[in-house]
Length: 399
Image (tube, rainbow, N blue to C red; front, side, top):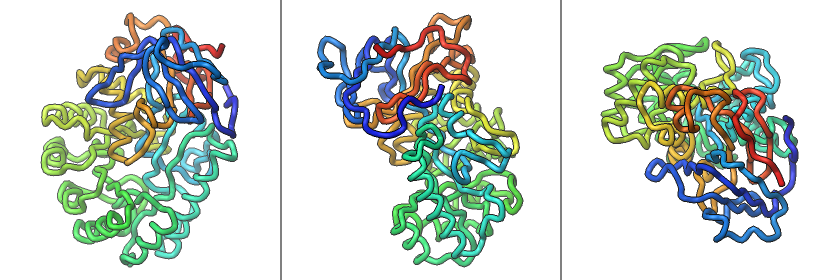
């Protein structure tokens, strides 16, 4: 369904009768609570209904015993402008992802823009324009209210420290995938990554074989030398490094391990298992790497959660953390965790109708995608029963 409200503050919102509350925190993935209280888009109470002040709520949502989790974060997307992608000439792809429970997207570069500029001035101009455009897009009601963190320049030869300072001062907080431009050597990339980090700009590096024209192989040694904050699509985008080299990245780097939908599924599972063996599951984050040649995946993050839980033997409540709290912490975001003072970005789910499982978590561990019954961003209902997921057994109601 279309968003109910696109502007304004939520006021006081009570979310009651929660059957299962997933926190997003990998150290405590399930919360002992059945009620949330939200005020103007921010969570102000987490507890039991009898202990919470619900008086004066503008909106009350009865969850009907369903599951509430932080809104999902897609750590790797390639937007262009607005809710359109030239990659598959598709309109409405961001709002469609909202129907898959995604409330935040992080750009790995606006690389699909036709005629994307590659001179230094053009690179900076595009990044600043994209940052401004997507920052204002939500208020205009485009994309269903999804928070798109965009304006991610792809670094090119000739960039100097002053360029990164200028980008930071203009509000740019991300680098696009290192390796998609002319900078492909480890030493040169490391220098630019360091400049970006100095000015508060987070970096992601392409990992594996080439994808779009102009990209190339970024191997283990370049990834380690560049030391970007996020090892982007560690399972390839689409073509992966060898499993041995992926293990080296897990073992020899302390950076985030980003597993994506549009990559090598075997390596995705092996990476998740290896990170858990190394006792660093907090480093795993999830993305789709879409839009891409393989399309747009509105349920891509849910599919990754089900894939990793069912085939890598990861408890479902932990797999949800890979797409919420882990990403929030690796990406320095306020959203992605259910706790007091955090943004009320929430996805309401239940087991899909006629799944073989008795509970939502069991269904995910069997490989089934849950049904989304409602999505909130900043305490505002952005969609009801999803048009994309299998129908949920039960859905929340506004009373």
